[in-house]
Every structure is written in structure tokens, then in C-alpha cells.
Length: 217
Length: 390
Image (cartoon, rainbow over all chains, first blue to last red; front, side, top):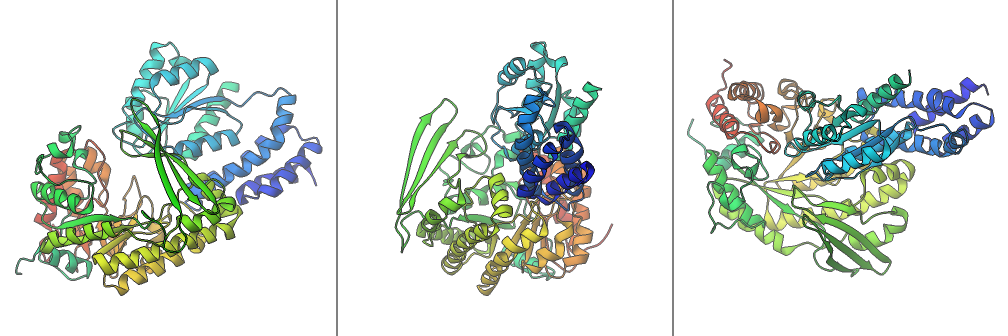
């Protein structure tokens, strides 16, 4: 099988959630000498693009997003030792959490799965996260991106507190900030001075990918 | 037309008969969603006082809701009461022991450990009892369905809670002609969402077994509730996840069970109520075909994709609508915008009956009182039959 054909099949596995087959195909790809990063970018990511499109078209839903993330994670388990051996760095570092006062985490967890599946290093601060925890983790990990979630209109205001605290700590210009969750609108995101608003998990991860690619370019 | 009593008006609308006017019933979980009352306890709200019976039990909540609705100028009452089919006591045929204790206390929250001890082993779950909007599961009971399925045979009891039934009965008596009693039924999935989706895809037969067990428990509890408490409507079901999964999964794991549940509700003379959050326009006929008689929430853009005009045209002969009011307009809009929105919903949804003017879901915290009052006033003003387009 040609490299192109293997990569295409890897992408198809993600679209069809074929966890068993993707493990085998990813091994074959690596053994055939395809560089691990190529497996990710030209195989897995292409599949995720199709999944994202199907999600936008409402052909796939949350269940399918989760499964596509799981399938990609399986392939990443095969690829990761090779990435480490080649000292390939993570695509980007993301500090993520649901802000103080809010205990909802389904959306945040889906974003984490998709970020990991796309080669990001993620630091999950969980739920009910105070501003100082975001600041500390950004400082500790030298994160590229801060991602915040809020489901409630009563808690979304705290996102601005986090932005302000990052500014006070002199870290605001070092990171891109993205916000999402049911209570968060595009207008609200502009008001509080963050860099992006995500309508859903797929578009949020896509924005993160664009940011790190722009940084690399 | 002779003025109708609220109960008569609501039932006429559900049965697609034109009442004297469109019934109006904004939904809310707790009055503190209103901007003016943020931070107040329920005892401090208008319409109640320290002596009011406003415990969380069905009859106490019914009493409290009636008072605040009266204060808001809402005559047509739909009073919800929860009926939890999970056991409070031992199951009739396979006993288990349930233990609960607080395992940690922090300034803002406590952690509660729940153990279900069965002959097949112990299920263990941890819940964070917070001071915010809701409790949060920290550790789900079901961690490995293959390993836990035998324990679940004990957990999914078919026992019922007599106390809840009695409270619902009292709430219905108290309501009288002022409205209708709504039952809420569901079974506790107690499984992480992501894990659930994985099992659904990778071990579909096992997941189906689990769904069947939950459904069996739900059918039994619903039957008991219908017979003993005689609710007018029932909202809920084990897996209202049409917006979360693709159609083939819904067809296997949800649809047949919902249809059976709704048949049971209809056989007892009550009305099933389907709550549809988020997008759903693609599935209007599918929702109708479950046998539901009420479709509530029905988010319009930006939260969803349903507009009253299209819903009325496609399934309006069979289903009564409750909602289709954009919550963001109620939350952030001006009274003028709210009026335009309600006018649209009434003019498109009310002809021929089949509309209850409502938010369909609880508005976000911080909603101004004036917008809720505008909703009520506008629906009453433009909702007189025959409906005239202006």
C-alpha cells in the first residue's frame, strides 16, 4: 500500500471510529517509514477535518466527536513513542478549566480530548477554578493558550477576572485566550478582551491549531 | 367566549381546541433567576414569607410556585413534581444496602460518598455538594459497565417511593382548577458522558442491556406514578439525547423505549411531554412519531434552529407547543424585543389551539423582571381567540 493510501485509511478510521484498525494502520505507517508528524498531519488530522465538517453539518453529534477523539487517541498512543524519540515537541501547551463558581465539565472534557488527539499538551485545572490557579499554571507550563469554559450566565463574568489577573501577572501577552460554553457569546468574548470565542468544541480546537500554526510559520 | 378556568384552558390547548385565550406559563426553576432577586433566598421572595411551606418536596414546591406565579400575574399553572424511580429502600426481590456519608468538608463544599452494596460487589460514587447551582458527580458509580452490569441489576430497582407519590397527590389536590400537574421521570445514568459514548459504540450489546434495565425500572415507576398520583403530563425518559448522537444510535438505544413509555402514559390518559434543547428542526417528525403530545423548549436560533411557523406547519396538528421563545432575548433583550418575539410565537403557533406561551425552559440567572412581565402581558393581549395577525 502506498503512503498516501495508508494515510487516507488512517483518516477514514477516525471518521468511522475504527479503533482497532487505526492501531494496526498507524503501526504499518510508522514501519513503512512515514514520519510520525506526517501520520498526524496528513492522516489523523485530515480525518478530524471530515469529522468537524460532519459535526458542523449536524450529521455527527457530541457522541461522534467523543468517539473520533478516542480513535485518534488510540493512534496517538502508537505514534507518541516515536515523537518522543525524535524529540518532537507537543503542538502547543493549553491550560484549560471551568471558571470559579461553575461545576460543568462535559464540554471542557470534550475539548481536552480533541486537543490531546490533535497533539496538544493539556493541563486540566478541572472545574470551579480560581484566577490564581490559571495564572500559576500558565507560569509553570509556559502555556501558549488559556481555554476557559462557563455554562452559567452567573459565572461567565469571572472569565474577565482571569484575564485581568493574567494581565496583572504580566502574562497576558504571552498567551492566547479562548472562551466557550453555553453562557458565552461572541459579543461577551469581545467585551472581556479575549482573543477568541468558540461556538463548539470543534471550532475551538480549530482556532487553537490555527494559532500554533501561525506561531510556527 | 365564556372565560375558561386555567386547567380547562391548558387542557384545551393541549387537545388542539381553541381556548378563550392562549395559556401563559413561563418556566423557571427558582425565582432567583430574576435580576432583581439575585442572592435572595426563596423565603425572601415576593409572594412568600418565612412561614411559607416551601420545602423541596412536591407539595411544598407546588405551594411556593403557586404563590410566585400569582405574584407574576400568571394564572395558568403547570406545577412540576419529580418522581425518582430509583429506590429509596430495598428492592422487592434483590436486596441491597445503600450507605451515604460525608467524607470531606471544605469551606465551599462537601464530598459525599455513596455505596451500593450488592451480592455482586459494591458500586461507589462521590458527589460534590456545592453551594452553586447544582451538585456535581466527582466519581461516577458506573466505571466499567462490563464489570458493573451485575451490580446494576440491584441498583435499577423497580421499587417506588410512596412518599413522593403522596406529595404529588397533595400538590394536585391543591392545584384544583388552577392548572395541571406535571410529572418528571428519569433514570439515573450515573455514567460519565464520554465513557457512555464509548460503550455505545464499542460494546453496543452491553450498552443495550444497560438501557433495557433502566427502561424496565422507568416503566414500572411511571406506571405506579400514573396510577397513584394521576399527573396530567409527564416529562422525561431515559435518554432524550436526539441532539447528542446520530440517528442510527438514537434509533437503537432511545426511540423504541421512548415509544413504549409514551404509549403507557397515553393509555393512562396523561400527555407525554418531549423536552428538546438545542437544534431539532431536522427531527420534528421523528419527535412527533414517538407519540408525544407536547413539545417544549424548542430553541430558536442562536441556541437552536426551530421556528414556530415551520414547526406548526409540519407537526402542529398533532403536537402542542410550549416554548420557542429565545431565552437570550428574554435575558438580554429590551421589552420591545420581547413583545415582538411573543407576538410572533402567538400569531404563528396559536391558531387552532396547540400553544402554551412559555419560555419553555428556565431563563438564565440575571433575567430582568420586566421581560418576564412583558412575556405574560403580551401573550395575554395578543392571545385572545380568534387570533388576529397585526
